Length: 87
Image 1 (cartoon, rainbow, N blue to C red):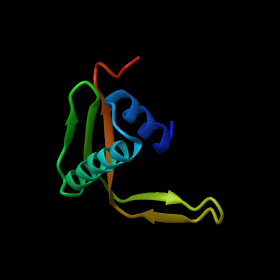
Image 2: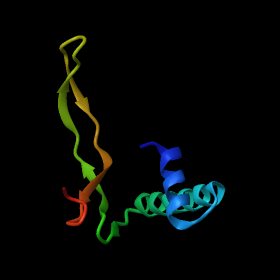
Image 3: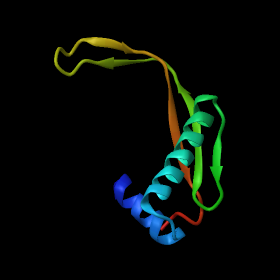
């Protein structure tokens, strides 16, 4: 499912036009993204939890040259599925 399909499902399920459903989806995604950028955890009960974690710098190997490289530290998003989302 891509974004267009999701907008169509939201419009159908909520009785909205596709334009309004797209605005609602984009507003929700902006809210989640904004919270994640501030370092907040986003918990959607029944769906799951998004959290930002820090990945430490680590050693790696360049596959093209086989030389050792240092992969810099960075922040990554992790998602943990809620109980109702598991299959």
